Length: 347
Ligand code: ATP
Ligand code: MG
Image 1: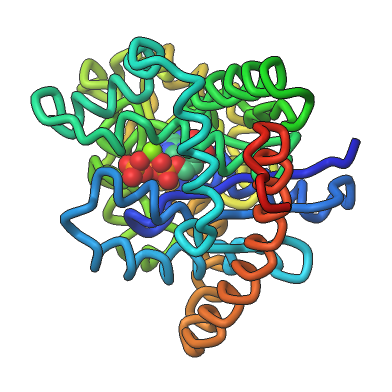
Image 2: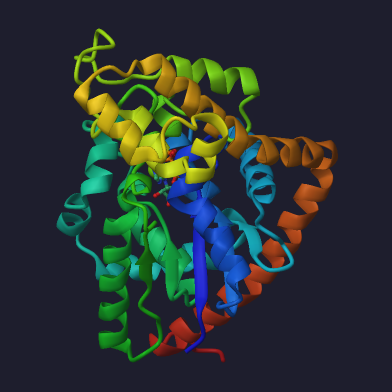
């Protein structure tokens, strides 16, 4: 079987460091590993419209932002097909057929969707499109016969849903679709990076993000203003490093080289954590170190992004070429699906 990746992001904002450690960094590594036959990276504008249908300008503008973030992080259109979801109309048709294979009760049980409904105040006016987005996500994944989907932890229920639909489809109509597998980050702190405000998830919709495109000053301001352990008031107080986003970010981003360069009095993160936990280490010192680490990590991404911003039409041309290619692949799968469902009357 061929090794195929499909993954993507919603164009609801610029990408942040949660996306970077949760998915983007891994994608670039997988892309460059040479172990995959095909890689598809989708900008999920149709999905973004399910909860932003009243704001098409926002979705449109952010397609450019997400594409710039991709290229700045090292996704390479020569190796990965980068495309726009709404351009592939076959995905809508697949979604329509897959809807028959899911019950309302099953969709309502999805824990990620449940949490998002609450967060978006959709409890009393839930758009059908939003509730069914996991089905459309199944169409995205299966259209490209993806075997591997690198995502953050919040996407596991979507992958489970996709696998169920694939099994139902293949059971009813014969072996046609491929069951995908989620790939999560190895580093536990990257599964769901918390927000700078200490909220469980850094999210474009929550406004608690450090963006890949933030200026050096913005990064510093955000790091210095981060939520830490509210009970760690005096430097001498013992502090908590487990629910403290500054330490979780250090888990996600810092290396022993960073300690050598910026904080040589500690050999590694374990030593720094131990000091904070027994008391005597101030938040300011931790934040200064975190700021140095974040600056070093984000500076090359920002510089590449500024370079790419000079030619936006080249970015759209790249998306157009990618979308045409993706459309051809999806059309082939749709034809197989219709054949399996015996609705290929005029073939
Ligand atoms: P929105 O609020 O519009 O849903 P989002 O910030 O959740 O935006 P998505 O486009 O929904 O971003 O997610 C894209 C990918 O990034 C998914 O694979 C998701 O799991 C991952 N991801 C998003 N936020 C985080 C995070 N804080 N930590 C780790 N991974 C994340
Ligand atoms: Mg999301």
